[in-house]
Length: 570
Image (cartoon, rainbow, N blue to C red):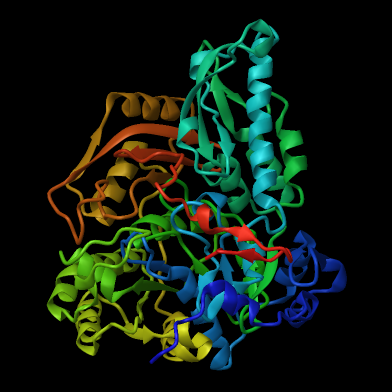
């Protein structure tokens, strides 16, 4: 009888980490260019990035994305880490560059995001919890601006802010649906001006996006100053610079701007920095982390949130537009069980046992559901990027199901479709995938270009994403969104790219529409200006900026023992 596979936390603790100083030195970092947070994690100074960019060539740049996922996820983080471990196994200097998790999912449904099995980033507990405090700094900076707004309203409103026009919420890095909409300032004059407000999860904050997209400390400060917090009675925007709060925000973020250096289970470098969600935000780690990784390695694998219609589209249209970095290849992660679900078989609910129908061999259901994979391959190649499909293997898969995936993937234009077993085997299980990705990234086939030009009107940009990436017939612009977009263009923000907030579970705005839906239109109910980050968020369908907890949150399983060891963290 096969023994149960050990939990991720047990696997992570079975490995003695290397000293982070040794990993930093192998990357060419000097002692004065790393700031230690204990023996196994450190921050890298911005001066190190500038020094190494001046002398080192850039490595190959790979983005890892996925099909439209199930609530369980398809192992994208695990595959990203495993791919880097596999690249190291076949002789390449490789690094992973991924996001830091939010405490919302950690204590909610999804759990941690350090990878899984024998393809993880460690220390696993630190990675999933406070790490070096970046998310707390982001929350503090964001909420400082919120406090300044209400303080200005309280003290005779010298900027002439229309209280009904305040667009800046408060944030907290815990899923708390009760804070989605609220009335603040109750209890009398000394408690502020009563008004309706809202709360986002911290990873949805524009400050998080600013941190991820900033190229330097000066750029960070300038972006913070451009953030639009509210509008005056005459309709002109009020920025963080107008409120004289941007400098203090930058001070709070000074250390958070430095990328974090950790390691994989196999001792390779892992840069962990910033954590915007891919459904409500732009869904990618920081530009600075990618830059330091690229000039210290032959190849870097970075992860984009959720499917290629979500984080990858934003990677190409927002992040690469901001960074000027040109990707060399894209990897699309797929699982047999998810493609079966897209093919109409079984149902996947987080926290409940897997539907037995998903464990039965059914190549035809996989083939039907693989239309979703085909569209996601097309979405990557639309940007001029060669695509490789990573088939994340499970013990219950049937070889005929892999054949069906390969047939569809290659027919859709993928260069290769490779089975990877890195969850169970670590880098050794990803060597075939690593070879295919190394070849794709070095073939010189990348002809990257964003989906739309800067000068295209905002409404047309949204419609272009909906029709070309989601496969929609068009968009339905609700009156409030139309008015908001028109105002943004009238005050000079029409050149910005678009960040669509929508469900991750479907190519459409409706999570019930699986596979490759057709004949739908995407409703855009609201548009939000993120002038500091440098994009406009279009809210599609019923997407919310604050998740809620499930009936049985994952946090119920997390505890600490008498010796101070964390238990129940997955």
